[in-house]
Length: 253
Ligand code: CIR
Picture 1 (spheres, protein in one colour):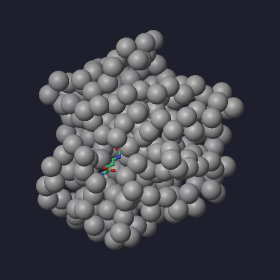
Picture 2 (cartoon, rainbow, N blue to C red; picture 1 turned 90 degrees about the horizontal axis):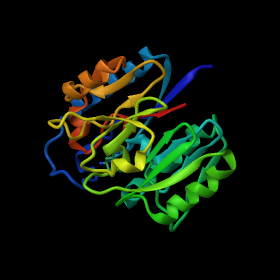
Picture 3 (cartoon, rainbow, N blue to C red; picture 1 turned 135 degrees about the vertical axis):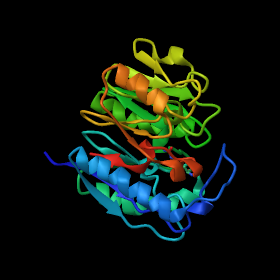
Picture 4 (tube, rainbow, N blue to C red; picture 1 turned 180 degrees about the vertical axis):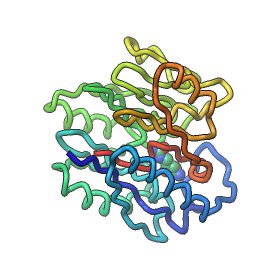
């Protein structure tokens, strides 16, 4: 079956993005777009057909398509992003996903950012963060329980999203920055620590036969290679200035 990656163009207003833990620094828009094209190429190389949605001036964070939906085999959940400025990103992503999955929707007062949702097999960890609230997590649980998923809330502090601190690299292994998340929550998983000099390296894209990692984190990449993973590095320096990483830039189906 054809694998599909939904991405979204980098808005010309990316410089006005939401920022929570970072200071605003200049972003090179042309470079950001070239890096985004390289990222899409890495997905194409891995067998994905990339569907890039367009974006408008009034959507500075449009490229971070992951936050607007969470895709499962059985359905997709359209989120209600925690940042009000990001809610206008929702309709086009919902329209794109409707062709591939039945949709469920998070409604007020719930908020969920997809960056807070980590799925490993039938376990779904959802970060309780500045973007995702308890009501949103309860809605996720109600939607997913009938499909056999177990939803656990995980408190996130010190970083934007759960997946800033931990992501899955296989059904058994997670890459993690223990400074930002309580590692005891992941009892039973093999934990691969980021290199201490690379605190933001825990966000990696898991594909069937490889991982996509930011090229800024060679030491953590080496740790992953040493565990037998095939690692593809992409330069994500410009979206990193907008507090984004690699998982945020695609929805994988
Ligand atoms: C935001 O603050 O919403 C964006 N500037 C960055 C979102 C990054 N998304 C993600 O990590 N899933």
